[in-house]
Image (cartoon, rainbow over all chains, first blue to last red; front, side, top):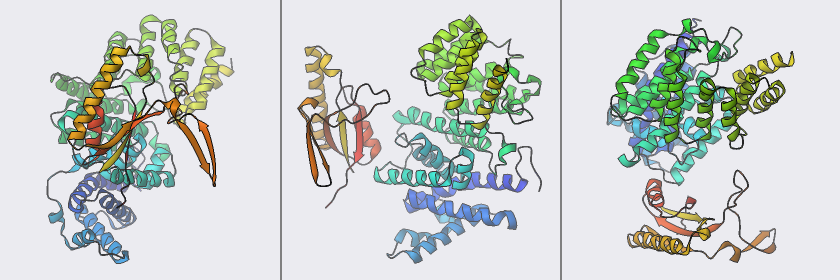
Length: 411
Length: 120
C-alpha cells in the first residue's frame, strides 16, 4: 500500500478528493429536486457508504458523480419498495437522469448556510456541514472527533429533525444577515480545521485529512462568495498554520510549542504566498475577525525567531479583535501577548481577572501555569497545570501538560 | 408555521426610573400592535409578575401546590433564575422570519422560540 506523507494510502486520499468534489454537489442538487433536505442527505450518505465499500477494490469510476447518483437513485428505489405509501418524490427521483437533477452550476452555498444555521448547536453544525458538503461519513466523523458513532448518528438525526420541525429555511440568508451568518460558517470551518490540525495523523491513520478538508471547503466558500474578504482571511489563517505543520509534533508525536519550533523547517514559500493574499484582501478595506486572526498568525509566521516577534503589533491586533469579539478567550490571548511587552506579572494580573469566566477552560490554567513558572512560583504553577490537565481532552495537549508536570515534579 | 415566543422577564426592568419603564412599555406595546396588525403575531399576553404565580407539580396522580413561578433556567452561574414574563404566538413562513421579528424587540429580554404543534 502506497502511503502518502500524511500517513494515508493513495487510494484513501483519492477517494476523499472525489467525495469532497461530488458529495456536496449531489446533496445540493437532490435537495433542490426533491425539496426535502433530510431525504436528500440520507440518500447521499448511503451512496457514499456504498462507494467506500466498493471503490477501494474496484477503483474509482470514471464518472464518480454519475456513479453516486445512480446509487442514490437505487437506494431511493429500495425505499419505495419498503414504503407502505406511494412516495411521489422518490418515484420522481427513480425515473430521472442526473442532468435533469442538476439544474444549476453550484447550489452548495444554500447547503452550507443551512447546515451552519445559528439555531443548530456548534457540534451539530460541524457534523452536518462536513457530512452534507464534503461527504464525511458517520464513522469518519466519529473517529476524527473522538466520539462514538452512536453519538454522531444521534446528533445528525436530531439536527435534521430540528431543520424540519423548526422550519429552518433552505436558503442563502438575506444580505443584512450575511455577515453574521458567514461568521457562523467560518467558525464551523475553523473548528473542523483545528480538530484535524491538532491530531498527529501518523498516529490516527485517518482516511480523511480533516484539516485539508476544512481548507478545501473554505476555498470553495471563497469561490462561491468572491466579494467577501472574511473567507479569504480564514484561508490565509489555515494556510499559515499548515505552513508550520511539519514542526508541530516531535518524533514521539508530542505537541511542540511555538517557541520551540524549528523555524527553518517552516514552509516559507507558503507563508509568503499566504501573506501576499492577506495583503491583497486587506486592500478591500473591509476588515473582520478572520482577517485579523490571519494577521496575527502572519506576525508569528514572518518572525525569524520567537524573540524577534512583533508582540506590540500582535497586542494591537488582539485589541482590534476584541472590538468584534469581546470575549474572555480573546482577552486571554491578548494577555499572553502582554507578557512579552510588559512582563509576566502584568500578564498574570490580566489573566487572573478571567479566572471566573474561564474556570473550565484548560488553556486558562495552562497559561497561568506558564506565567507563574516565569515568576518563580513553582508550587502554584504545578497546581495550575494539574487543573489544566483535568480539563484538557485532546490527547496531544494532555501529553504536553503531563510532560511539564513530570519535569517540575522532578525538581 | 406557528411559533411560541416565550419571553423571559427582564430582572432589571423594575430598577429603571418610572419614566423609562413607561416609555419602554409604550414602545413594546407599539411593536406588538404593529406585528399583530400584519398578522405576524396572532396571540399572546404579558403576564403579571413572577411572585403572583403558583406552581403545581403533578406526578402519578398526586398534585403539589406551592407559591412562586417555574424557573426557566438554572443559569451557568446560578445567579439569576429566569421566569416567564409573557408569551406570543407568531405566524410566519419559517424560523428566519420569526427570528427577524424577535430581533427587533425594543427591550432587554431573553426569548425562546419554539414551533407549535398544530392539531386540526
